[in-house]
Length: 195
Image 1 (cartoon, rainbow, N blue to C red):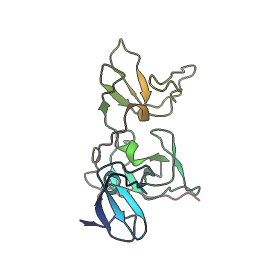
Image 2 (cartoon, rainbow, N blue to C red):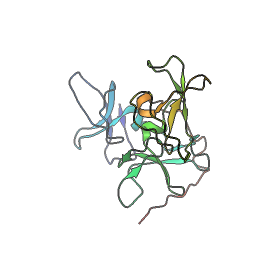
Image 3 (cartoon, rainbow, N blue to C red):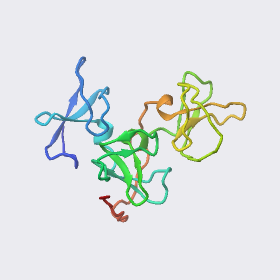
Image 4 (tube, helix red, strand yellow):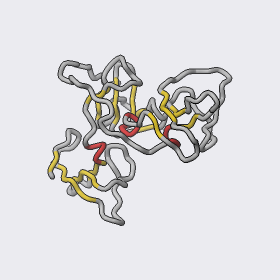
C-alpha cells in the first residue's frame, strides 16, 4: 500500500516490522514497536501507523476554544515545544493551537479517557485540569516522583481512593481517531509562527 503524507516529499509504503528490526518514528521520535509502519526507504523516514494516520485537525477536550492542528514541526523559533499534556519537550509532530500556545505530542493527544492499571483495583480516568495549588504536593502512586499541577494525570474517582499518577506511568496506549474535527474546511484556524 502506498501513502502520501503531508510531512514528507516522497510516497510512503506500509511495511510489516520483522523480529529484530528497529525503527524510530519521525512523527513522535519514539521506537516503532507496533506491527507495521509507513516507510520511505530512500530517506530513512518512518512513521507509526497512528502518527501517519493522525487527523490534521482535532477538537480536543483539553482545549475547547479552538481546533488543534497537526504540525510536522514546532511553530516556535527554538524548534521545540513543551507538551501541555505530559510536560516533556518535543521537536517533531505536535497538535498545536498557535494562538493559545497549546502543544501536544501526538501520543498525548490520543490518550484514552480511562484505563486499567495492574497497580490499582479501579479504572482510572484522565484529568486535563491544570491548577496551581499552593502547598499541594502530590506524588505519583507508581513512580513516586512529584506530580505537576500543570500537567495531565490519571486519577481514581472513588472517594475512598487517593490514587493519581502521571499519564506516562498509567499507559502507553494510543487511541487514534479518538477526537476529530468534523468540519476542518469550515474552521479556518490561523497558524502563527513565532519569531
